Image (cartoon, rainbow, N blue to C red; front, side, top):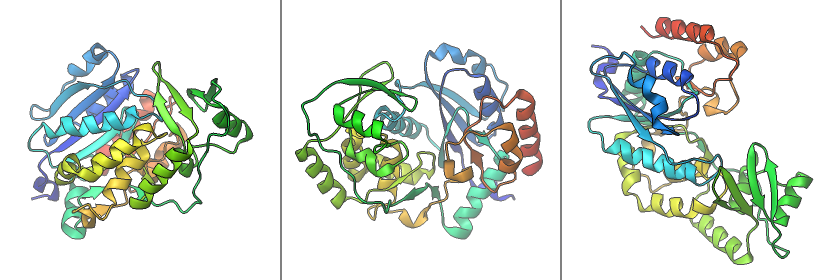
Length: 330
């Protein structure tokens, strides 16, 4: 009996928006009798009609869920992730939850991945995998110092409305919360529709409140891409700590990379001894795009998944990936 036969089911939640051609390929690579694949789509669910026609094993479940509109770096990211976990818990029998984006790629066969999970559980007592760390940078807070002035501008690939303090710090290069994680909690952030964010500096009272909150709770940062055992997900759903940190982050810039590391690596987590900081992603889930020239290096790594595919990766490139996976994993 192979190790993977001891694993019940993997529940995949694939968050995606836009074109579905790559998504069809990804879903097909995950087909396995022990898998339940759920596609969470931010857009018209009718765009997934071709996915519903994909030929799959009879005992592989394929389902579809509408996503709330998600804005990159906005609070909607944590709302949707929470919703995805709640949706997963409505499905019985699965043992592991894995979240992916629609432009991710598997690097091993599903049998090899199941073997990996069984091995980690049996040999290392690790059942959940999430990358997180405690930043050692100095605290940063951006105080309001002027009467509010509305500024509309671009920041990276975001469209934002901000106050003069944020605008000035961005112009001077003194503020870059996408790259500098300590600056994220120093900003008030709210979604204002049409994929736009309202971002401003904090009042003195707000700064004092956030300082007190993070003095009580350990501020961790990492990646949202995880592999979680069902008991870990069930604890998150019932955890008062999760609720407290989730509610606190609802007005924080780019909260998705703080929420789960801060909760999972807390001493309050009853399963922390089963938690690995290796999230089983190439480069720990770095968002750097994977080009055709990167594919061989990525496939030869020991990771199970990688993100995210560059648009220059062709159908023939994906064929090479499929062939490599099939030979790599029995």
